[in-house]
Length: 133
Image (cartoon, rainbow, N blue to C red; front, side, top):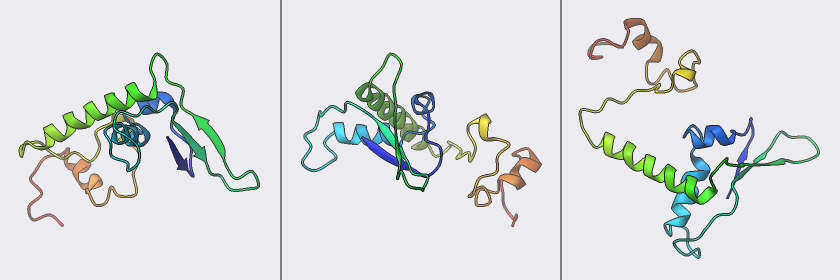
């Protein structure tokens, strides 16, 4: 399974931690028969990224080498984690936090203005948001 990145490709640790789940979730879809012409239960031997940085070379392949695991096992784990998240959000009382990983709490993302990250961080997350602009 292959993905293209214009920035820095994620590490195996980031993929295993669920911070970059694209390839593992695509593999989970494939393993469950989600791709036409590929039978359910198919195995994936390798995950990797092609780093597109421009220039003459056109791209560099960066394979993901999992320690004590393989792409199929990581795909199954990512699918199980996705199922847990879906189940949590099936509960109407579950809040939708915009920043769930503390490692990004000091970084302002491209879409954080939509979640009003700056406003909520000033109030400490208090309030219900009514009447605010």
